[in-house]
Amino acid sequence: MKRFYLYIIILYSTLLLAGCHDSVSPPAEPEPQPRTEAERTVIVYIAADNSLSGSVTRDTTEMVRGKNQIPEDVNFFVYIDDRKMPAIYELSAKSGMQLWKQYKEEQCSTDSLTMLSVLRDIEHMFPARHYGLSMWSHATGWAPRRNTFGKDENRGINATGMPEEMEIPVLRDVLAHLPKFDYIFFDACFMQCIEVAYELRGVTDWLIGSPAEIPGPGAPYDRIIGALCRSDVEGIVRGYDTAYPSTYSGHYYSGVLLSCIDCSKLEALAEATGRLLTPFFMERSEPSTSGFQPYSTTIDKYTYQFDMCTTMRRLLTEKEDDYTAWLEVFDQAVPLRTFSSTLTWFAVTSTVSRVYDPACYGGVSMFVPLSSYDVYGLNDKFRETSWYAATGWQATGW
Image 1 (tube, rainbow, N blue to C red):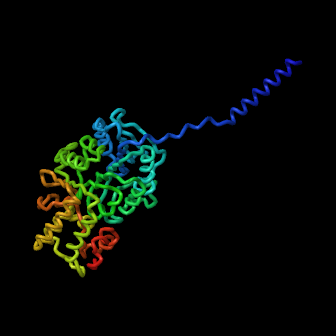
Image 2 (tube, rainbow, N blue to C red):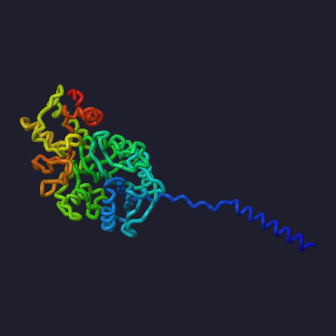
């Protein structure tokens, strides 16, 4: 009898323990902890859910080829949103390109909350004393609602069913929630314009990019990855510039235009420019643009971009001292600008793709209001820019 009771007790205890075991969840995996603070974290943000998706592999291959240029005290991350699910990869000299985070759902990479979430995740988990950012996509400069930065064509995400772009004030607001960047490098067309630079002057020390279209292959990352890791803005420009002219996949690319902008000097440039430029446009005057260096000739989208230096030179032809004084301020704000030995650049939107006057080349574009732009709304949109207000354009009636 005792044996029977003992058997019942053991059986009951076994069933009770089994039931308890089934009701207890396994211990959760510990949350990953941020790394020790590094010297620098570099982020390459690739918004390629568009016609550029086929170029991603080429550029990431270049990055892997240049991985030995990444110091141990630098974190290097690549966010990729192409025709596949978005993901974040870490690149290092030791391990090459390794997946760090795989997103399980599609997302619009030109959406402000998406971009902020991606950049904050990396910044939080990989803190550093300095940060650098490369922005890779389609782009067309400053004009709101006219294909500004980035293009995301995922119709399943975008409510409008049309490609989503990010306007520059929105980009500014996103980046303002992050530590200030040493540099922002736009590996994208038309982004080196004074209106973009002035809008972003508070979120980065330097801006690097092209006032015109860039070649299809874009930046040669195997040549510039070390400069990206050092925040060497001159090294980024020089390394990019020396890659052209060149032939990629049977296509000839004659050249690229580049410059770097010291954002700390932009307010002085705005004051000097407005004082000398706006008198030519009072009461909606419209000086001839003959001799201005255009960066595109497709009138319905791009003709508003003229070289800043060439424009000021032509307007101040009879005021040599004024131009010399202005140029001194400009040179401090734009200490480096390059063009290829061919004096040309890759262009699809322009019948003009040659630097007419190398001595006056500025490497930064600017908007010049014209009555012909009223139909496209460009003059109205120009009034919304910070550059418009800072340079006193409102006094001209434009």
